[in-house]
Length: 279
Length: 260
Image (cartoon, rainbow over all chains, first blue to last red):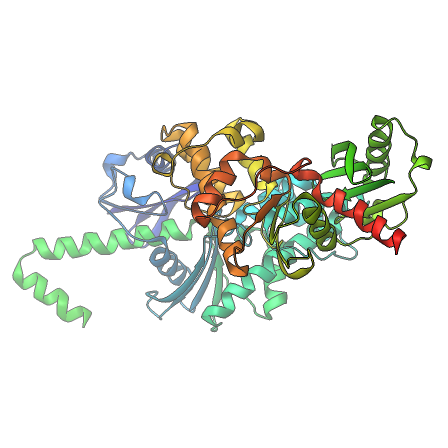
């Protein structure tokens, strides 16, 4: 059976194709003007890699802020639940997930089954989100992916005193004109991100088994800065790309919903049997 | 008596030349490049517009976040003191001063004699600042002045859900994609800005007369929205450009020092 999960975020869209318990393929693209466009394109690309089309999907669940607008998804689930589910599948020890997306940051606590118990989110302020890093890279005149390697050359990082993204941009502009090394500024930027995120994490409380997901999780310098500031070690998600965890979670929900639908179709006996299994 | 005042703000440098309490020449220059040279150029151009040379002016005062770049006597007058002094000069009955600057908003309450009772500065977040307006104008492909001239009744304003300057840019783009009229978007931005400023003023108490200063005070759209939220009229006409009030205050503070 082929299940698909599709996560339409604010900056990127991701799709995961699942066959039973195996990830067949995945894809990440930059968002298009419309969520349905992003969803179709990213899912078709992921399917194309394994020579399949939308018609081959048995069940698709969408997630992310554009999740309500995906015509080929049979249902939609909040990305908070999906991140919990996906991270727990990738690493069963996971109890806390820090998801740093393009326009928000969430800290999610899950039980041993990956079900969400508590969460906090910042989507009011760009500080501590991917947008902060993007704005800072722009001021430094480097690409987003160059920030982490650049910060490795730092000999003494500078402190960014502002929280606000716009005010930090101006602060960095002054630092550049004062002749401060770009690598030292880049290192300061990573720590500014880490400080902001650790404040959010402390509101939920850190439990053992912390995983980091979302696009920013691929920035090793920010991840290291968070572990340093918080004094924690992150668990590994193995082969799973941290950016597709939301889409993976929604594919796992697709599998679960398909199974439930099958059981319902099997009639009252099948339904009862399924219930007793769950309890 | 001739005096000079220079205010190095976060986005603009302002210089005034005054003669017996009247502004006779001024300069407003956008901050870019090296501030030290820029400040000198601004002072030079204001002085030459007055048909004078710097040596003619014995009383000189400076203020603003970049006052360390001003190389004149009495360069550190303090921005609150200068704003209060300038506001009292602009309107002797002013009890509340609302300075809407490039990157910060300052509210000062004055007593009847123009002395500072209390003040609040919001400089943690770019929301509601002049820079915020510039970012929004860029996203809308308008000038800040065009945005300021747009006065829209509240019921025609587009809803802006975010206070964050960065997220606001994205919201503008998605409003445009959804076919919402530019005029309503501008109205929405001005309306939400006015609401934020009114909240700050009310925390300190909106005691009339309320004088508004700073670059954003020139935006009719923001000021109209602010009045709607406050439910009180603010003083709109002042004897000098709204942006110059702190520079005037610095000149007057320096004069006070000289005379005492």
